[in-house]
Image (tube, rainbow, N blue to C red; front, side, top):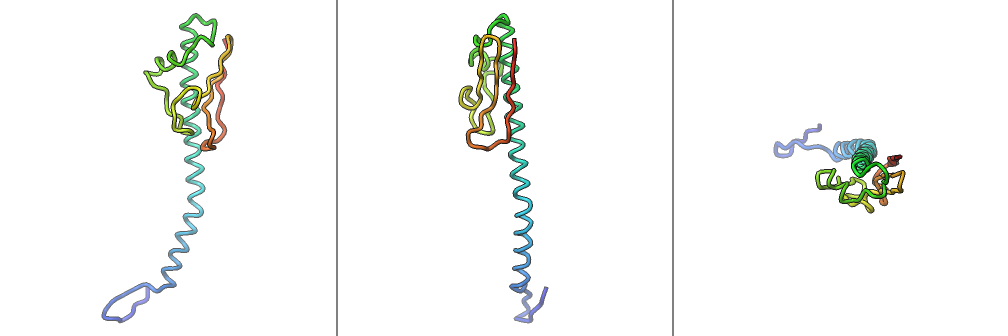
Length: 131
């Protein structure tokens, strides 16, 4: 730090301030992509965990309904098993089956996946159930 005797004030030079700003800019340029990647990974893992919880609710309803037809499991049944609410999908910020989570069922199979139309998450896992 340079000192100048201008009525007893001490100050940084313009060059010193520019060097500090440059160093901060480099640190941000390195840290920001890593941070954004970590956020995307966290969203993906949360969305996959929520989809797995929905798959568990679908399986429980399938068994409760006699274990003969996955297509008989309704959104209301799933919601009841999940304490009244579907978890929020962090990729879309919604919690609607059909929009934020896709549940595709036939008589003998069901596939559950979180949706990501905006690209906020990495590759999402499809949970397949077979009767």
